[in-house]
Structure formats: structure tokens, C-alpha cells
Image: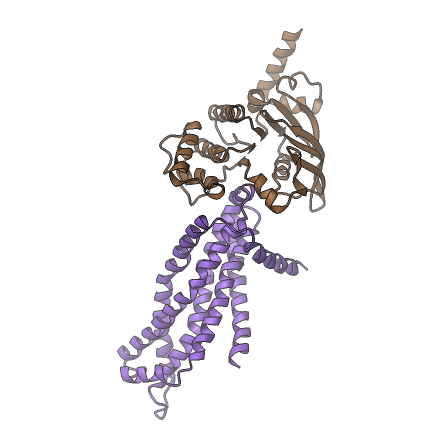
Length: 245
Length: 255
């Protein structure tokens, strides 16, 4: 029953988020600030992780291909498929649930604890629209982050493959071009948009409706990370089943 | 004028407000006093519409709050200024941006007009050269003054203060009290202050509502609170040694 209440409150929060919009001149600034905090601020860690995980995927694939009959270009092919289909959209989203999700929960939670949300409400401002909507809009640029993750993952794989001596550059490039299915990119971006929505709303929910003090802000951040990850993994399964099978 | 009739409010089956009725007059500093846990903050949050109440009615100059549409409630709230116990300044904004915030949200003023108004109210609360400081860089007294400046910047008709001098030294507390009193007189607004500070009661209590266990136990002014025979009030008012001596002196003077 309690879980049903939580789910109900979450959906009511989403409806409320679109009501009584904040003045555009103010909203514009909030969106730009959130783009800086949530998108630009995440590029560094996403680039770093993507490059090296791409490299690791390549090394592990190459090391597991011991049969001489299997062509060398398969390393590039396997890296591309892993990065585009799963690593970039899902793995990076889990990392973002930790980085961006915790930031959203703790910043909104601190506003709740210090009565800043009450101050907004007293002024007659729709606090959900003021706080959550700009995060939702700025995270619509999340596919841009994932594109960079895809590119750097494949690039990291190429560097590891060539400099590790697993196959030649030509083989790797042939591999990443082999049997390319454009729909896989569409599939990856559909997942990305759904995950962006989850990343904006679940951490906001945990921050907005938290009760207590500083300790509870920390607890809310942890809970928010757990639930955001669980929902991303579940939706990943459902979307993959729906779109690819 | 704010009128309150028979307000009841419960949390998880525990009744916190048990039918409070009173009124807060325009141009006066109205104080709600009582011990911690007596329901003062819940009462003020009900007045502001931050908490829904189960029973009763609150009206602002004849407009019954619960009967207003969402738009009407929003318009009414734009006429309310609130000073929170912890100041509730927006961490991500400078002091000037905090004060300018209600103007940005609710007026169509140009940037220079808003800046002029911010300068004016910051001077009014005796804050000069603090515009670019962040709230975390300001002292408790400064934060309270910024909160007052933000509350009055949009010329509110109603000003609410939740324990405005909690955590302040006695001298700064008196400055804040006097500032609120001056602003109330100057703008002729309805001011409601939540406090358990007896200094505030003696300084600015033009009307005092005493709450005890969610009920209104007494109502009067700073002139009548000394003379009351209500035991609940006298227990609270004369709980400190200093106040006991003041009462003794008062009785001796009377005899």
C-alpha cells in the first residue's frame, strides 16, 4: 500500500511539474544553469569512463577470441555493438544516477530542510515547476552526452586494440562498419530519452518529498540512487524486449 | 485583517490545533506566543496555506482562503511576505538576487527599477554593501534582515515572521523587533509574528495570542499580559528569574 502511495505521489508530481509555469525569463536562466550543472558538468567523467571502458571491452573481446578462423575485425564489431547497444545508454545512465541523481536529490532535499521550498510556496510559486521542470528540460540534452560516450567508447576501443597489438587499425575500422544497423542507434536514443526522464524525476521526487534534517538528506540521496538504478535496469529490459525482439 | 475561525489540524491522528479562533488586525504587530510544541509553527503554516487543516476557516480581508481558486490563492500569496525561522534564503543566489527574486517573479519592472528597489529595501533594513555576498557569508542577524528585505520588497499586505529573533543575541534581536514594528507602521500591513521571546512580547506585542497544547489559552496585549490572572500565561511569562523579579516589583509598586 505504501509503495502504491509513493508511485501515486510520483505521478502526481509529474503532472504538477507541468502546471502553473514559472515566468519564462526566470525559467530560461534556471534551464541554462541546470544544463551547466547536469550536462556540461558530467562530460568529464563520462568521457573518462567511456574511453577506458571501451578499451577494456576491446581487450576482453580480443583475448577471448583464440580461434584463428574468427576474423580479427570481429573485435571492432563486438566493441561497437557493446558500446552502442548497452554500455553508452545504460551503463553511463547508472553512473549518472549516482552523479546527477545524488546532486538533484541533495540540492532539492537541502532546500526542503532549510524551508527554501516553503518560501517558494508562500510566494505563490509552483515549486515543482520551478525546481524540477528545468532539470527535466536540461536532461533532454542527455542524448548529446550519450553520443559522446558512444564515440569515445569506440575510440578507446580502437586505441586499446591498435596499441595493445590485438589487431590492425584497418581491421578495427572494418569491424565497426560491418553489419551496421541504423535502428540500433535509434533504439539507443529511445532508451536514452526514457532514462533522461527517469534521471530528472526520481531523484527530484526523493529530494522534494523528504522529511527530516541533514542526515535524512544523505539517506534520501542513497535511496534515490538505488531506485533510479532499479528503474533504469527494469526499463532497459522492457524497452529491449519491445524494440529489439 | 486576518480572521481565523475554529482551526483544527492533526498529524497521524494526533490533534495539534484544537479549534483556534482569533483575528489579526491591520497595522498592528500581532504575536503568537507559547511554549515549544504548543502548535505555533503549525498554526502559522496553516495561516499561510502550507498545511491543509481539517476544520475551520481563515479569511484574508474577507476572502476565505479555502474557497479561493488556485489562481486567486497565487495572487493572494504574492501579497504575503514571510520571514522564516532559518531565514530560508536561496543558497544559490547573492543577497541582492534573493531580495530581487519576488520582483523578478511577480512584476514587469525593468532591471534598473528592480535594482533601485533592492537598494532601497536593503538600506531600509540597514544593509549596505552586502549586495554581492552569498547568504552563507552573512551572519545570522544579517540573514534575518535580508529575509525581511525580501519579504517587504514587493510591498506585501501581510507579513508573517516565524521566530524572527531565534538564535540572535539580545541586542540584534531588539533591532530586528524594532525593524518589524517600524515596517508594520510605515506600510500599514498586517504583521503576524510567531515567538517565545518575552523581550519581543514586551517590545512589540500590540496584540498577543497565547497558545497552549493547541488551544488559545489567552488573548491580549503587552499592556494586559502583566496584569492577567491566567495561570497558564503567568507560568510562561514569569518562568525566568528576571521576569519573576519584574513581577515582584510590579506587585510591590501596585501595593
